[in-house]
Length: 145
Image (cartoon, rainbow, N blue to C red; front, side):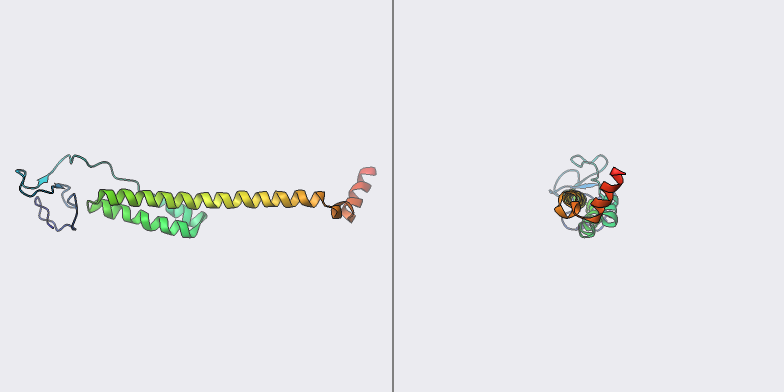
């Protein structure tokens, strides 16, 4: 597939030229010779790639979720530049979701971890072994002193 404005080679199914930015129409028999340059109607702004968030998740949170997020984030710009707007937006959404799931799972893990530590500390204070141990005897002796 070729751009009718500048002649650049384009991938099949492209909606916009990667070289000149002209929109490609589906009907080649139109009076505008099959292209419309300038302000391309129907094309929204470039979606966020979430690459920085993906890298942060990989380094500090959850490596498997971060790697999947990086893969999707790296596809956003190439899809956008090839005129595949819907695919770029889908990859952006997937990159964001994988990164957020990675962060959420790590936060959940740490919350459960801290709850288990607190439960262990509380259980240690309320067991019979604690009150019959030498630590309890030392504490009561120090208090009575």
